[in-house]
Image 1 (cartoon, rainbow, N blue to C red):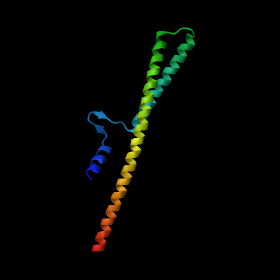
Image 2 (cartoon, helix red, strand yellow; image 1 turned 90 degrees about the vertical axis):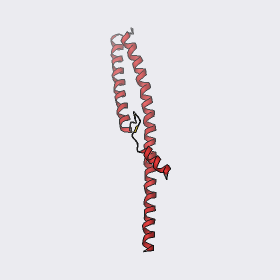
Image 3 (cartoon, rainbow, N blue to C red; image 1 turned 60 degrees about the horizontal axis):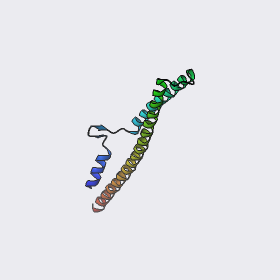
Image 4 (tube, rainbow, N blue to C red; image 1 turned 120 degrees about the vertical axis):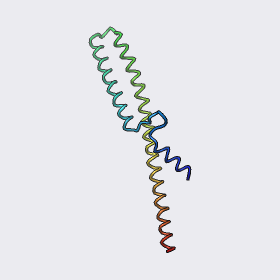
Length: 117
């Protein structure tokens, strides 16, 4: 029983110390922001390559590095989203099973009291 109380407490916690645990909606918002930055950076690179087709400027090199970093961050956020969605599914299934079991126990107790009386 103590295990169940501890597990439900951990599952329902949204904060762990000073670190905020993001939910799937917040992670999706971060992914959208990164995708917008990637789109802007790609468009800026296309413009620079169109204006100077045979010449790489310092700005275009900087944008290529920034684009690689953003794509790396995007992959990390997508992995975090997959993990978070799996965690939320596990939590939902656990709570459904827990409350169903609790309801069955309460029904047995009420039925037992009804038979005694």
